[in-house]
Amino acid sequence: MISELLTRLRFLIPRKKRGELDEELEFHLEQAVTTRIAAGMDSAEARRQALIEFGGIEPTREQCEQQRPGWWIGTVMQDVHYAFRGFGRNPLFTISVLITLALGIVATTAVFSVVDRILFRHLPYSDPNRIVSVGFVHPLERQEFVMGRFYVEWQKDQTPFSAVTAQSTMVHNCDLVEDNPAQLGCISFEANFLPLFGISPALGRSFLPEEDRPNTPPVLMISYGLWKGHYNSDPHILDRMINVDGNPARVVGVLPRDFQFPTLEAADIASPFALDPAIQQKVNGGFGYPERVFARLKPGVSVEQAYAQMQPLFNEDLKWFPPSAKSDTRLSIRTLRDRETQDARPVAWILFGFVLAVLMIACANVAGLMMARGAGRQRELAVRAAIGASRGRLIRQALTEALLLSFVGGLAGLAIAEALVMVFVRMAPTGIPFISKAHLDLRIAVFAALVSCLCGVIFGSATALQKPGLAPLKAKASMSRNHAFVRRSLVTAQIAISIILLSGAALLLRSFTKIEKQNLGMQTGGVLTVKVALPWWRYNTDQKVMDFYLHLEASLRRLPGTRAVGMADSIPPGGWSQSFRYSDLVVQGRPHTPPGTGPHRS
Image (cartoon, rainbow, N blue to C red):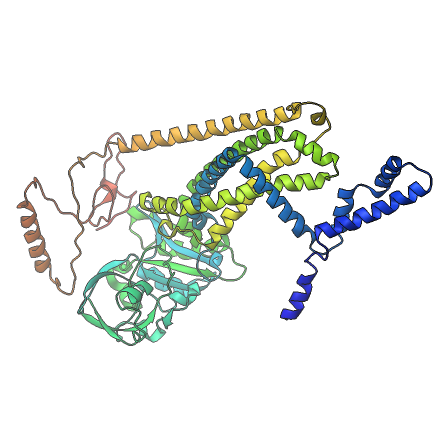
C-alpha cells in the first residue's frame, strides 16, 4: 500500500529542474537558428523566425511542464510565493485588507455559531423530522400539554403514530441526601421515552416497562454531568443506591453527554413516569397530572394527516372540558424543531441576513482596495502578458492572492470569534434556544473556511477579470472607464447596504428603549427576589410549610434596609398561577369578557 502510494507520488516530482529545462529549450532553439543560418539567413532574422516557429520560451516551458502529472502544484506554489512577495512590498495594503476581512468573517462566524442550531443543524435524535409534539394548547399555555385521562385514551385509540411517549410537564427541585448533599433538578418520563427518540444511555440501560408502574421498587437515571462531576465518573455507579428526597433508589443508567430533553430543560435525575390509568380517570375528574406528549409519525404520514386523524379524538375529549375553556382550547401537532425554535427562527434569519450584509460590505471594501492596487500594477500585468503569460495564468495569480488574503483573514477572524461567542452567550437574554450550546467546533470552522473562500473569489474577481492591454506599456497606468464604473458600483452598493443596516439598528435600539421604559404597573427599583424550594419529604405537612415561611418572613423583615417583604407562588407579571378565574379578569379600556368564554382554574 505505502510503496504504491510513493510510486504514484513520484510522478508529482519534476524530473527536470527549471534550469535544466531552460537549457534543453535553449538547445533546441539554437539548433533551429543554426539550421536557418545554414539556409542563408542572417543571424538576427534566423533567431526571429525560430522564435516565431518555436512559440516563445515561456509558453513552450509551460507546455512542457503541463505534460507532467501534478504540474499545477508547482505553478500554484510559484503563484503563492509571488503573492507573498507582493504583500511584503505593500504592508499597509496587506494589513488593511486583513483587518477588514477579519472583522467581517468574525461577525459572520460568531452569529452563525448562534443561529446554526436554530436554523440548520439536525436535532440530536434519530430521524427528528418524524417526531412531533402533540397536545392541547390554550392562550395561557401555548406549549402542548395533555391531561392524564386523555393521554391514556389517546394511547389506545390514536392511529397516525408508531409510538407515543410522555414526560412530566416541568423539572422540579429535588434533594440528593448523602454525605455530599446537593439540590438537583428531577424529571420523569415513560419507559419508551429514550427509544422513541433513538437515544441509547452512555452507561447502563433505560427503564424497563415493568419498572414504569406504580408501587414498584424505585429506579432512576442520572445525567452525564452529575455522573461526571458529583460521582467523579464512578464506573460502579450502576446498581448503586442513592437517596433522593429521602427515598433510596437504584441507578440503572447514565444519560448521554449531549442529551437534551425535547422541552430544552436541564435535569439531573430522571425517574419512571409510573402513570396509573385508573387513578388518572378519577383524580380531579380526569384533569390531574398534565404532561408533555411526543410521538413518532408512521412512515408516509405527514403532520397535516396526523392532525386530521387526531381531530375526532380531540373533539370527543373536548366535551369533558369546562364550558369556560372549550372555546379557547385547540389541538396542536407540530414538529419537534418547530416546538423548540418557535418564534426564534424568523429572528435568527433576520440576524443572519444582517451579518451577511456586513460581510458583503467588507468584501466590497476589500474589492475596492484590490482594484486600487490593480490600477498601479497595470504596467506589470501588461509586461507579463507581453512576454507570454496566458490569460488563465494571470487570472489564477489574482485569485491566488485574493484567496491567500481571505484565508489569513479567516484564521484571524476564527480566533477572535471564539471570544465573541462567549460574549454572546453571557449577554444573551433568556429564551433563545440552544444559546448555551453555542461554541466553535469543526462545523463552524468549515463554515468559516467556506466563507473565507467565497470572500476571496468575490473580491478577487474584481481584479482577475480585468484584461491587461498594451496601453500601459506606452504611457503611465491610468484607470479605465470600465474600472471606474466597477468602483463606483461597489461604493454605491456599500452605501445602500449600510443605510439598510443602520436603519434596522436604529429601529432595534428604539424598540429596546421603549421596552426599557415600558410601564409595568409596579415599582421594580430596589426589589430583590429569591426562589425557595422546600423538600417535600422534610416539610410534608401544611403546618411545617407555613411555619417555615412565617419564620423566613420575620427574619427578612429584621434585615437592615428592608422596607417590605412579600411572598407569592410566582413573580409578576409572569410565572405559574394556580387560583384565578381568568374569565373574570377585567382589563381597563377593554370590554369585559363574560364568564364562559375563558379558562377556569380552581
